[in-house]
Each structure stands twice: as C-alpha cells, then as structure tokens.
Image 1: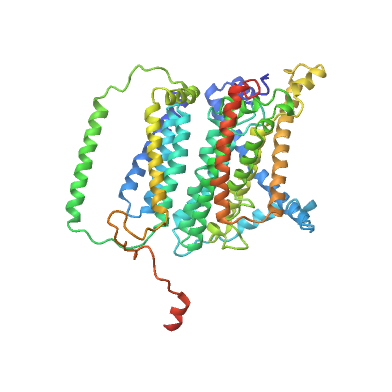
Image 2: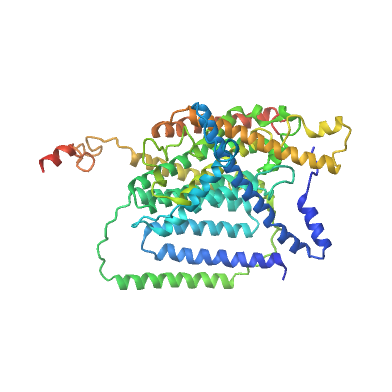
Length: 373
Length: 200
C-alpha cells in the first residue's frame, strides 16, 4: 500500500530543466532548500517547545507564566533567544579557548544533522538513507564527546565532573535505546525510517507499533528522556543541587547552543517515538480508505496535497503530544540519584530490552503475519 | 568532469587531508587530551571515506563504535586519571626520536611500495549499496562466524578483567604464599581532614 505521494524534488527539478539547466545543476540548486527548511523547522520547534515549557510549568505550579511578550507570551522564547544572543561571550581566563568553543558546536551539530532522516510523508524528508535510524543512533553517540570536551575545556573541576557524568549517562542509556530500536527494525526488516512507517500504515491506528512493542515503547521513551537530560534524568545539570555541570562556565550564545541542542533533541526524540511507535505521518484511519469512501482517486493532485499536509500535521501533532508528556513529567517527578540512574540503565533497562528483543524475535518466527516475517 | 565527480573528488581530498594531518597530530601533539579528540576526528573522517565508497552501514558503524564508544572511553580514561605531572627527562631523547622516526619512515616506505605495486583496479562484483547491511549480516553468521565469536569472547575477557581490577574486594592474605598481604596502597589510614587543619 505505497502511494507515490508528493515528490517535490522531481517537480522542482523538472521546472528548472524546463528553464534549460542540466539535471545536476538542478539538483545542486535543490539540495540547500530542504536543509534550510529543516534548520528553520528545528529552530521553530525549539521556540514552540520553550514556550510550551514555560506555559505548562506555570500551569502545573498554578502560575500564569509569560504573558506580556506577545499574545499569551508567545514571543517570550524569542526574547530569551535574543537576550542570550546579545550577552557577552565569556571565555574563562585559564580555559582552553579552542576546545571551549568547539564543545557546544559538537553537541549541536549531530542533533541537527539527525533531522536528515525524519520523514513527514512518503517523499517529505531530506534523504531516505538506507541506514536511516541507525544513522541517528550513530550521530547521537557523538554527543558525549562534545560534553566531555566542554567539561574539560572549562578548567573547572565541577564542569569536568559534570561532563563525565553527562557522558556516562549518555552512553549507558544508548544501549537499551539501540536495542529497543533493533526490535522495531527486526519487525520492519529495514533500517529506513520511511519503511518503518510504511510497515505501520496497513490498518491505521491498529497497525501502529505501540501495540506490538509496548515494552520497547516504554524503554525507548525512558532512554530518550535520559539522552535529552530531561527530568527525572537531568542530573548533569541539576541546577538546585549541583553546580550546573558542564555548562557552568558558559555564557551567551555558547550556553544557548547547549540549550538549543537539548530542546532540538527533545523534539527529535518525540518525532522519532512517533515514527517508530505511533505510525509516523499516518492518520489513525488510513488516508487511502478515506479517499476511497469519498470516491477520490489517490493519485489526484488535490488528494496528494491533502495527504501530504495531513502527514505533516500528524507527525507534528504526535511529536508535540509527546513533548507535552515530557514537560509534564519534568514538572511533576523528582530527580533520581546518580546510582539510581545507573542502576536503572544497566540493571533494569538493559536486561529488559534484551528480553524484549528476544521475545520479538521469537514472535516474529512464530507469527510472521503480525510481526513482519 | 561532472558536478558529481567533482564533489566526490573534493570530498575525498578534504577527508584524506583530515585523516593524514589528524593522525600526525594524534602522534605528535604533546597534550594527550588533544590527541584523543583528534583521534575522534580521524575516525569520523575515515567514516566519511567509507561513505564515499558507498558503504553507508559501515560508515555509521564506524562512527558508532569508534567515535561513540572507543574514543569516548579513551577520553574517560584520560580525564579520570588526568594527573598533570611532568615526566622525568629521558636520556638520549634525540637519539631515541631519530631511531623511532627511522623505523616509522621504513614502515612508510614499505607501505608506499605495497600501494604502488598492488594492482588495485580489480574487476570485483558491483557495489551493493543499501543491500550491504543484509549482506554483512549474512557473512557474520556464516563464513565469518568464528572470528565474530572470537572477537566477542575477547571483549568479554577484557570486560571481566576490567571488573576484577575495578572491584575493591581486598584479600587479607596472599592466595599463593599465605602471607599477610601488604595493604598500604589499598587502605589509607583515616585522617579526619578538619582536625588536621585545626591543629596546623
């Protein structure tokens, strides 16, 4: 049930070739567009989630939250960003200025590049790379290096310890995360995010992976929260108890980069949860059925535009529902201790995800129809 | 020359430059932390080279294993035992450097000879591209099963060794000779810090 869907690149390239450009030049002109779009989408996503964070935390604590900057304080995140942008960029005197600058950059870049594989529709993604979800796991493993680098370069023992803790947390939750993803990959026989979503589009909401992988879903969500350093796992920052970890010496835009990376990572993880477990761009009732009931051919241009828009809306909606859950979790749960964190990761989630993988393999062999044989 | 091949050539040149210069930096820099970070850069550039060869799975695995795991562990080790002490001056440092440099140059000459004399342009099977992931899996579980399992046993041994070293279970007596073991290194006498400071 794979509809050709919208192919913007093809139309764009045909239009340019009509103007007398070679196909390669057309592709060269096309390439920056989706990249720019995704960069803008990621940053806007951060602004939205910062606003949500402020408003929802206010609601949880029975405050009003920001309300003067724009309607309902909607321009507050923009004001925050501008404030950080205009702050003085301080590099501590004895710090290693090169590594100090490179650290935040190394934290941000992998997160932004990971948006490469996020599909908003059959052809609405930057690049349908075959290794898809594996690429994301590989990129997210670069982040600890940035954390270690900034912790070390600050020349501050609290920063160094914070960096080591953050890296330890990041690498210990990567393993259950990867194993949970592996179970999904086993069911859909592909690493590509598009194939993973396609495999969930058969019967709308009933064919979503969450029904077949409930344990994997929970493992993935917990690990994603830990990777994003969100409460209850925000030990590296722990602003009330510790000095703020590896970010202690940072100010201005470099600090903002950490902030940005955290929120982009949150939105990215939420989108990936929706891609892996909640049917990605799929509407709870398959759009093909709806088009059939309305007597519209699925290839008609109008239907395709509507399908594409529904896909984007569904992906964003599911992702922001999960962001909402993450924000509620942040403002309702207490922080775990470092030993509890490591125990949970290594002694509970890791064995559980291994068992989940084994059970999935067994079910795949036993019921190949339901578990993607 | 088309745009695609030009891009590929530029990418190849940049990546090779990063690999060569980065590797030289890893060896020659005196600050070990810089060396470790540069090593991560070299690993990433090698992953880029794999990508140019249409081996995207190997490239991602290279980043995951070498950059994400091995390099992070190296950094951990360096930062946890980061003692800033000056090493003792070694006698005849110049001679030692000259000798090791000579050995390295000899190895380099050998490698250059191999590179020049080997016919690289073999008529092999065409690149499989995205199918490589499945192909690698098949090979790992059929004809490369033994090396794969041996590597896992090796890693297991390393892990058990690390756990044994890291655990602080102390034996009072030497297991072999039965004598009381010297525990001066393991147990420090408890000295309350505050009392000491007050007395001084």
